[in-house]
Image (cartoon, rainbow, N blue to C red; front, side):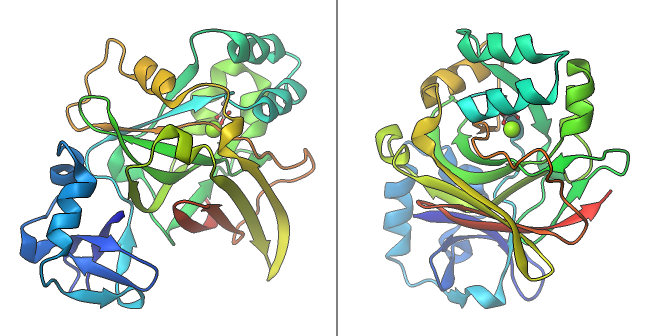
Length: 284
Ligand code: DO4
Ligand code: MG
């Protein structure tokens, strides 16, 4: 079941259940916040019960999907796939051993990515920095965690990154990763799903340029080296998240070193169990 935030034709922000063709508006059932579902003991069961009521069904074409996040902080894990480790060791002699070590270490790399209000939703622009020369999208499975640290759902994340800035010096990582429109989430939160089920999903990216595909790639979620509970457990160590949190789980698809994004490219990230997140690239 897919939980979404959307704007209706009058511009009101609402919560809904999305399927391939429509959104069921949950406002008449008293659901006005994602958090009221995500904090429930059993979000999917609660929604299942609500969905039996007679609720308005709005065609998907008539709604504007918003990022499926309210007040949660967005964090990201890195170097969780072998492909990510290799790519980063190639991009930087200077920092190669750090990537090598963190891939093997017990403690994962976890970094702060975004506050909720800065996240781009479906169809919104994603940014490439104007002071960077080598920019890529990072297609990632995102864990949606409630305030107790429980994984209650999944969404698609794009951890936009400037590889030249990151490669120059590891201490520049926050500038390579955190800037205007550097994080996209959506199109909705797919509730439930055990880790075993989710590990069967495939993540794909296609980057469209002038009507053609400039890059495409895919990997299996099962290539993530660490368990979801391990990643979530580290995030919640010595931290409180009263509104819950979203944790990107790292990228396993990295374009060749000759590839960099350009303005107006369209990034289409698909995760087989969730849907597709599309964004257009803008220079920021
Ligand atoms: O340390 C670099 C960032 C790694 C990352 O974002 C990833 O592997 O997805
Ligand atoms: Mg990443």
